[in-house]
Length: 59
Ligand code: SF4
Image (cartoon, rainbow, N blue to C red; front, side, top):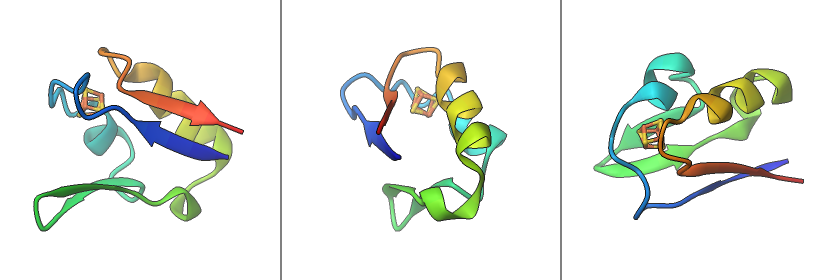
């Protein structure tokens, strides 16, 4: 599974980085998603919490 990020839709609500900081993080001002750091279920739950639909799981 991969997570797609829509830069234009993100409103920096921070639900992803607060919810699963080991996967969703900002490194050198760039948003990084490391899907190897949590279970697929945990990642899917966090993706579903994005209030702006900026994250999508792609199989
Ligand atoms: S939860 Fe969604 S809107 Fe908020 S920072 Fe993450 S991707 Fe952006």
